[in-house]
Length: 208
Image 1 (cartoon, rainbow, N blue to C red):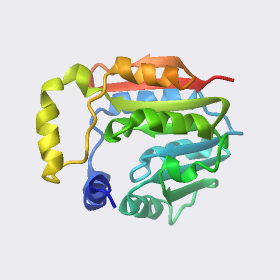
Image 2 (spheres, rainbow, N blue to C red):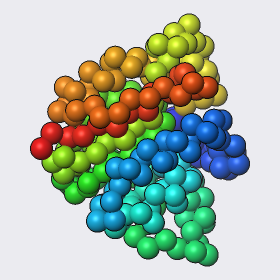
Image 3 (spheres, rainbow, N blue to C red):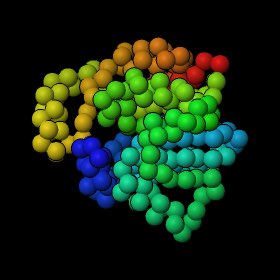
Image 4 (cartoon, rainbow, N blue to C red):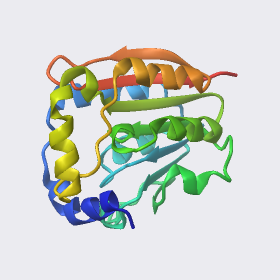
């Protein structure tokens, strides 16, 4: 188990209790996402945390597979539906790499607040491309700290080495778009919330 997964296992209960930092932006992202969802869709979310977003979107689609590398996060997510299961919603301890055998299995993939936590986001984007059907939708919400807080990188690196925080990759919006387009995605929607300038919300579709 890598250090970041251990961090999220330790932090799961605290994470589940933490209030949403920008509720208005979160609500808008939910609403925009749902414009791209249909009742006949098979959806996968990676880095789902304790499942809050999955609970909102799952009733609107045929199936919704919500995954996270942290077993403790998934335990909490499952507890949230123990008394009131949602048809078609499953929580699994997994990463997209674990699902590589399911090529072109999904109509939409969500990766929310997760690409900047990966050492190789480009490889993940390519993995997502392979999991999506032609014309499928990839919805991401990514901290692009190279644009907004580049001076924080040495501090973030030290905190990670001291096991105080998870790994953070300092990405830029330009790099993120380039990686998506190089992998065969077309950008359909871009948004930087006014109160959360670190965040870049993107919707892209896989070429048909």
